[in-house]
Length: 65
Image (cartoon, rainbow, N blue to C red; front, side, top):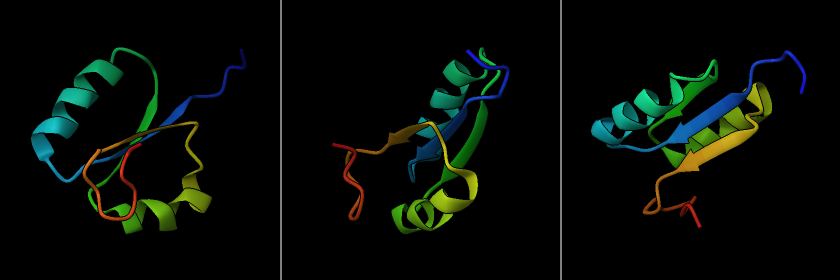
């Protein structure tokens, strides 16, 4: 595995969920970005290109499934 930092995108509009996810992720040296709107996540993808996306299962555009 390379020395590059793994980029993780969290797409969730519930701040409590984001805090819980960040608690698990912060143990690793991951670069985390958060979007509370699914359209924002889609628009930002070409800019930060995450390797992992954790998406809320109840979003209008990205349903997490």
